[in-house]
Structure formats: structure tokens, C-alpha cells
Amino acid sequence: MSSVNDALENARFTYEQHMNTCRQCRADAAPCAVAKHLLRLYNLARRDAMRAAGPDAPTV
Ligand SMILES: [Zn+2]
Image (cartoon, rainbow, N blue to C red; front, side, top):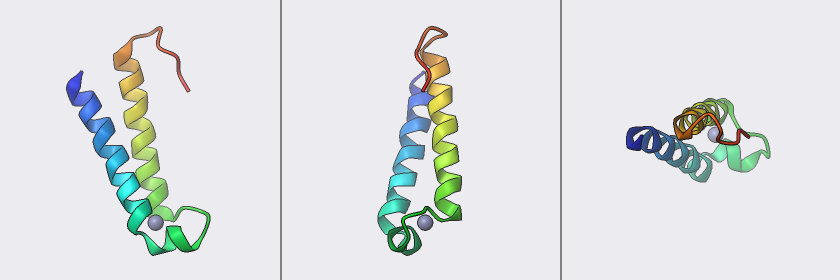
């Protein structure tokens, strides 16, 4: 389970790092293609973490 959380933390960290450093994301209100990709990975990791937490865990 810790590996799932590590993946989630890593995905979130990578996404936040991008949002903090990407000029395009800062210039536009909309995320760039890379940000969308990273956000998708983050959402997938979060879904895996939810699933690992148990079938009764609330899904967002
Ligand atoms: Zn970006």
C-alpha cells in the first residue's frame, strides 16, 4: 500500500512542480499539454490509491 501512496505522492509532486515552473501554464489560465498529461497520471494514481484503500472508500 505504501508503494501506491508513493506513486500518488510522486505524481502529485511532479504535477505541482510543473505548475510552478511551466511558463505556459502560468501565462495561460488553462494547463498545457504536459500539465494535462501529468494531471491524468495524478488522477490515475489517486484512483489506484482509492482502490487500495478499500471498496467502501468514497470516490471523487
Ligand atoms: Zn505546463
